[in-house]
Image (cartoon, rainbow, N blue to C red; front, side):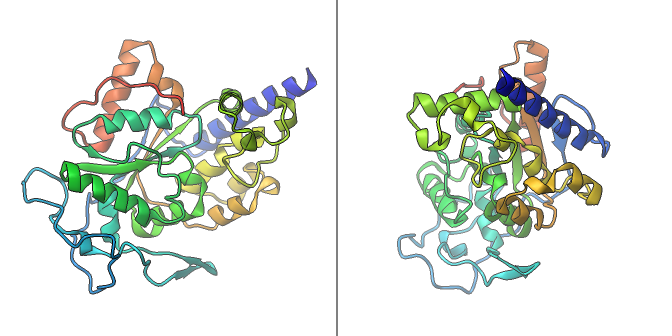
Length: 328
């Protein structure tokens, strides 16, 4: 019973911290967050002088001039799929900076946290006629986004350019590699960030590990043994500490992140991953923040508003289909 109480108290404290985190800095309290700013949709794609193109990528045009897409006509050799530009030192840490042509494959990124509805969001977006994205999760995009760009390029080669390109990885905002991509290479990529109550998140993530025999995620075993106020070293592990979503929301840079705010984040609990993330300058990407229950809201007015908000955020001309529900 004591452990259950600890779990409940920790979850409530985390929720209150997240709420305080946004309210302190006067972020509007609305059902669907749209933290928007004026940004250009795309940079003009031009061929680079780098001729060292990956051998497995064919140097042929993949965009037709159909006059009905948001992308500049270009070709697969617009940038090098295998090499990053020279590392850019930022606060003594090397950061890979990619040719901005890669961003033509990342109009949007569905991310946030595991067991927060990102798989359903991916299926929902994939079903839209104007999107081009992998049907599976881009697990290693934080390691090498060029792989994700190549996957999307291959889809375009088969299905046409489409108007909006993107991918889903529930952990991307939890890895410095992806946040650096958004910060230094693709500031126009629109981020769709999904989260949920940390107690129901823990329950769902733990049960998922048991049902699918992913015991490597759980470690010791019983739920009570996974109640720990400190996060694990990797976000893919099931501990209650990994439900402290505010640590990663802070990295998105939508608040000043001064000394007082950092103190609220409990720096004593920071892992090396947290410290690396918090050293990154604020990202300038626009963000759509949602809570997973919005995708199953039985209130027709709320559901319709949510759907319209996300369509407007991406820029869809045609409406999205009904929201599918997937368990992954």
